[in-house]
Length: 424
Image 1 (cartoon, rainbow, N blue to C red):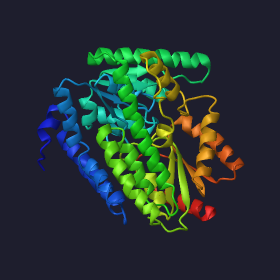
Image 2 (image 1 turned 120 degrees about the vertical axis):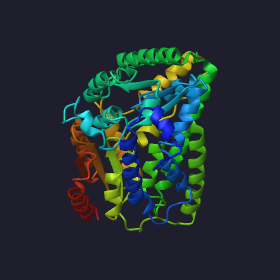
Image 3 (image 1 turned 90 degrees about the vertical axis):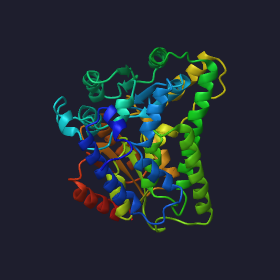
Image 4 (image 1 turned 120 degrees about the horizontal axis):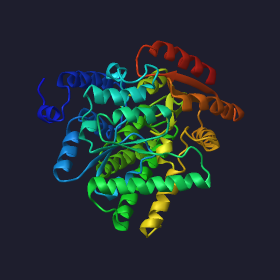
C-alpha cells in the first residue's frame, strides 16, 4: 500500500517490498503486545505515535536535518558520548536492532552462532531494511565484545564506520585510555561535522542529555510504587524510544506522562493486582522490537518494576557533572561519568553485582530474571556471579538465554511460570 514516505525510502535505497513486510509484522506485533493492554495511561499515546512513525516522520526529520547541513551520527552503545555529537550540532540516533528479519543476509557474512543483536544490525544493513542506518553520515561502533568488534570490520565495507576502544578494566591507566578515546572521538566528530566543539556548546549538550536522564530516573521512581502504576512493557518502550527520538521533544512528552503517572500513584491506582509478583530484569539490552521476554513475564501474572541493562538503569544511573566551566574540565566530567558504566565487558565487575543487589532490594522485588542473548558470552558468563550475589542476598534468580525468534516462547513461558510459583 502506498505511503507518503515511499519516495523517501526509495531514495534511501531500501528494499521497499521487504520493508513493507517488516512494518506490517512490526505493527501486528506491537498491537498484540502493547495495544492489548488495559488501563494504559493517556500519555502512552505518544509512544504509540512514535512507533507508528518509527520509519516515517522521524526519518523525515533526519532527512530535513541533513538538508539543513547537519550530520546524523548512529551509535550502537551507551558508551558513545552523545553529548559530543550534540555539541557539534549533529543528530545522534541509536541503531541497535531487535528483530530477526535480515538474519539470513547477515549469516552470509557472519557465523550462525553470532548473537542475535549483531546479526540483526548487520542484517538490517545488508537486506536494506533500516532507514536509520541509511540516514547516517557516520556509524560509531565500540569494542564492548569480540563479536561486535569483528562485525564492525565487515560493516565498514557497507557504511562509514568509526570504532571507539572501550577499556576492559578500571585502573588509572584505563581511565587514561578512555580520556584519549574521548579526545579522538571529539576530533572525529569535529572533522565529520565541520563544527568546532566549544565549551558553551558542550555545556548545553551536557545539560540536555542530563535532563533526559533525570526525567527517566523520575519515571523509574514512579513505576516502583505499590501498586505498580505502569506496565514494565511501557517503561521499556519509553527507554527504547529515548535512543532515537528528538531529545527535547521526548523529554517534554515523557515528563508529561510522569505527571500523569504521579497522579495515578497518589490516587493508589495500579495496572496489576497487589499480589502480582514484582520482578526485575537484568542483563543484555533489549532493542526495538525485542519485547518477547517482558511480554511473557507480564502475561504470566507478574509485573516488571525495573531493568538493570543498557536500556534501563545502566544508561540513566549516573549524570555528567554540570559544574565544569572549561572545555577540558567538561571532557574530564564526561570521561568520569562514562567510566561508571558497569558493562559486562569489564573485569572484574563487582560494581555491577553491587548495583543489581541494591536495585533489587530498593525495588522490593520477589525475584530477578537475568536475560541473556544466545552467544553473548560476557553476560552469559557473568550471570553465574550475578546468581551467587543474589543468592547471598536471599533474592531468587532465573537465568534465561534466548534470541529474537518466537520458537521458544512456550518453553520460556513454562519456565517463567514455574519461577513465579516459587517466588510466590
